[in-house]
Each structure stands twice: as structure tokens, then as C-alpha cells.
Length: 302
Image (cartoon, rainbow, N blue to C red):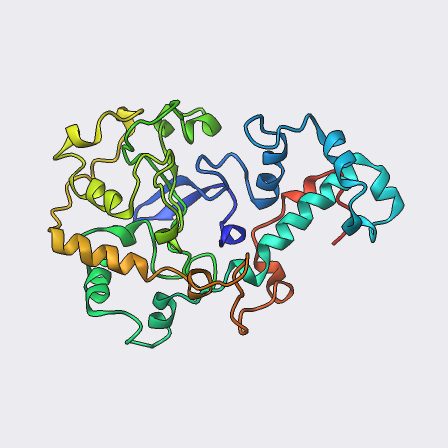
């Protein structure tokens, strides 16, 4: 959900509250940003050994050629491996751009639109904590940035000190080669976060309450969480000792549930049905951060 709206991977200048300016990596697909945008992302699972494990584009093209949904394509495209796979990747991107994947119909969206009854009293207390003591809004913005509605992330990179689990992942370092980026991963959108367990880049925390307790007491209870893979770059300034009470954790957790889309939570089909007023993909065509496909040799025209 909402993957098509993630901004492209870029080194951006950021204005700090004190008026100073810094540069930092943000955006991109996968937790480490190794795909610049959605087009670069959708192609990778076909050829990854632990996913579809296809040998090359020729094998993918051969599997696609006899599919009935490809018949409208010109014969010269069907015969060219690169052209055919290019169109397959573009089709996936266009599918992920569709209104189904960006309904913006959560209780929080209704609250932002003026329905003050959309949140419970506990959720409203959680919203206040989100903006203040808990510091969530510092990275998971409540205000729109790259889209007309908030995506609930700045899409920046940070090392949260996630408990080690499985093979060590260098994170952003694998992309940039900068030691300061070891163990840093992209801040995800919190939309539908209630439904996306397990949490953190390696799935080391099983529940959303675990995540909040980890943020709250990571530095106070290190024995509870165990070692982390890249301790030298862990963020100790913004989390690890938030001083939240158990009741405040509960209010914050309840508020995070308000980010769950109604169309997803109550869906009755394989895919959720987007609200009727969701803008069409065509009407927002120029707003989507998808352009690396133009660098593909098979790109000719829109």
C-alpha cells in the first residue's frame, strides 16, 4: 500500500529548525534504498535467488509470451526480450499506482478532514504524545510533504538499534559505502502499520506494542533487547529513553491503529476497493515519482 508514492532515492538538503542546512539520503525502495524508484524495484524479485530465481530477462520473457493478457502488444515487442520485460515492469508499476493502493480512508484521514469524532479520547491523547513527548512526528510527518495527503514518513534513514536477528544487514551502507550509514534503514510510512507485523527491517519485534516499548526503554533495558548489529551508528538522541508511562504507551498504540485504512481493514475481496472519490492515476500522472523507466533502452514514448 502507498509504495508508488515513496519519493525517489536522492541526497537532499534539509532545513533544520535552527535555520541550518544539512544533506541526507532519503527515499528509494527497499529498506536500504537500493532501488531508486518503483520501476527499479519491481524488476528485482524476478531474479533474486530467494524469490522467483529466474536466470535472466530471456527466461522471464519466455514465460510471459504465451500469456493471453499480452496479446494486445505489437508482435515486435513480443519477440524482443528486453522490450517485453520492460512492458511487464511498467505494467506492475501502473498497477501499484492504481487507486486501490492509495485510498487515504483511515480514521486519521477523516479526523484531518474535520471529523473530530473519528478518533477516540485515547487516540486523541496518543496524537498529542505522537506530536510531543514520543517524538514520532519528527520522522513520521503528520503534514503532507511529497503528496497532497500525508504519507506519515520523511523517508529518511536512521539506525534504531534493532535487535540483531539473522544475517547482519549493512543497510544504507551497502548502497553508499559510507561507514556512517552502517545499519541505517529507511523510515517506513506508518499507514496501515497495525497490519504489518513483524516490525523493523529484520522483523525482530513481533508486535506494535513491542516497538513502542523498545523506543521507550531501549537504553534502559538493554538486556531485554539484546545486541544490535551496528552499535557505532545507533541513534541515542531521539529514542531509547522517552519516559512514557504504560498508559501513555497504550494511548499511543491506540492512535497508531487510526492509521489503518477502512477499505483495507474491512475488505471483502482479494484487493481492497478504493473510495469512489479517490483520484484516478491518469489525473495524477505527473505527480508519481517514477522516471527511471525512461533510462531503459526499451523506452520509446508514454
